[in-house]
Length: 215
Image 1 (cartoon, rainbow, N blue to C red):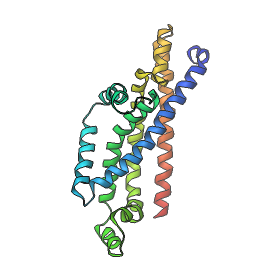
Image 2: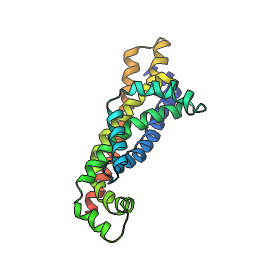
Image 3: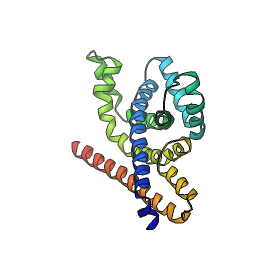
Image 4: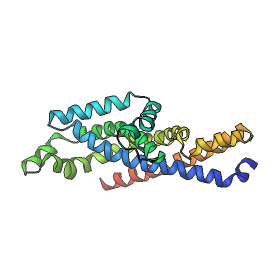
């Protein structure tokens, strides 16, 4: 307990940092993932090519490499004023968006084709039919895999600790350097991650339950 009690403020700061990275990266991933999924099922060939390239590239690139690109290439080429948090969110969010896109695309494929055809028959554009007809029906099937994706995202944020971000893994390095027992450090770090992942799992169980009732 001494490791936790003597460094409670540091643990709290690391816990908050991990939660913040997870939440903001998840928002980026959802927005980008839905857009990319729409591109993948679009009738426009260049959009389908873009969506396929996005998913293929990001799903098959190690996250650590994306962090290196985000921190050492993006500031020099595109946005020199981004701080370490924004760069970490960019790497985690874009990486996770590829998995979100595939989950959303799978959900879209479960919606009967006649629904989209009916939407187009009453004059809705592709974007309108996706937003008003297809995506609301696909949501029920998208929610369960998103839970696993965001739990994985929580653990992936640990890489951000090596790039000047305060989060749980960064806290473990700091305490280890201060001479604390590494076993007890990892015990409390593990407990903190379990709290976050169980909270995510519980949230998505509630969403699943409400969507089932909505049927």
